[in-house]
Image 1 (tube, helix red, strand yellow):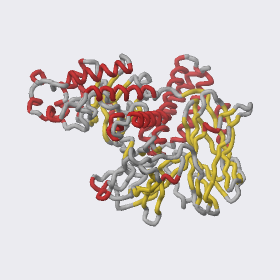
Image 2: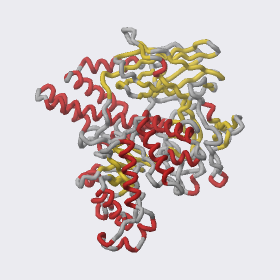
Image 3: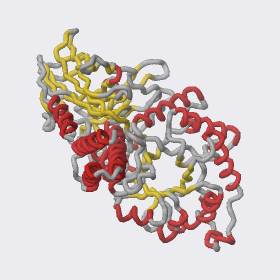
Image 4: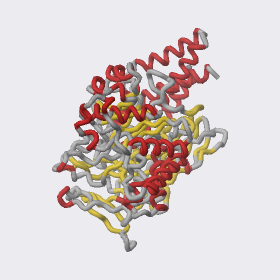
Length: 595
């Protein structure tokens, strides 16, 4: 144990290693933090002239961050990572380090803190992770944002994206191109102002141990700073996340999203090549952020009413791309219809005893067709959760009973947005509930008592940019409350945060739509880290229970100590960066024992 603890301590000591500066200073800050770093604010949580440190499991994506400041304005600063090498000369290539500049722009007055709108206020918020910081231009005098687009004539122009709802003109991402640069570009520095750089490692599965390198900072062709980088790759891979209360049950990593082939085809006027490429880029981006259970389009309900043949072709192709991109095909959300039409649900016959009611005439046809297509593309044995009516009233919930019985009779399952009132009116029909608002362990226990799985949304919705909030509420705090995963609303929203006056909501965004691929944010990285926290907790539990099962006293003690640590974490208050390190210490000790 001491050797492993010293390993972490030695690594941590590297983070304060000195570096030489020339007309430039930098401060290493946590990537995952509730501190909002702004250009004119000295970092209170930074290590001046420190080492950029990353600890990651094999195959894990993990981020670090630092702030740069120059005593004079610099138009072009070039940042270049070097290869990382260990004591034996083994190398992690520089290409494994992905640099991004964290763009600060103006958002609604509640930015960073809430998804409710305050369009009368404008506040600076660090959010966008960009290769090219000039994708967005900010007017500090008027507190407006402008987005660079390439118009149909091939010319670059900046479009105002801070206008109010009454004069908002939506972007057409299929006519005008919105795209970040493919690689990291030089940045500029204003005199005396901080700029935050984001560093993400994809830890090679073949690597292990401590590797060192630098990020070289060059001005006018001359290297003025070598920022040390230290990476420790742990001797294990992370498992599939499982629930806290039952290690045999998967912790589902989902969200509602509009990334669907039918939507892209309709927007692009049936440009199959562009639409498929855009969907593929979205799914691959989700996978890199641990989001492997997004909702799929619903078979036979894709908006192609004139052609069932076309609708089925689109649905099958969406499933094929989903599989190709490595998404989880064992369990699907949506895909097969779970909602009858509104007229059916509101008809007076829904008040009749169930035995006297009839199914919609299309129900059997559409349900069985959707199930058949899923099985033909993905194979038999896939669990499909069909979405019920969104946030239904109790009469609507009861009206869904007969259609849902047909789903159950044919091996399908039901998921519904819900609250505790559903237990009395239809809980026995629901296999999975997505509970809105604050989550509690006692509420999860009620649903688990009848065999229903439980996720949550709107605690809060997407929108707040604070990555620590996203990490906490979609990760360990939810996990320790015995929930079965997370299914929030919604992944991608509009670029303009100031059109919420009509309905009092900000843009709900973890990513912003681009023409070629999505633009990521620090809050989406918060989600990635949330799920990684659950993966570490899962591995800790797996190893601890394996150690206890040996019956050897020393092993039993080590396993119990690890489980005790996990049980005593206050998910709402604990420093999650520290919790991660403590979990790693327990895992390393158990891993060494059980070799």
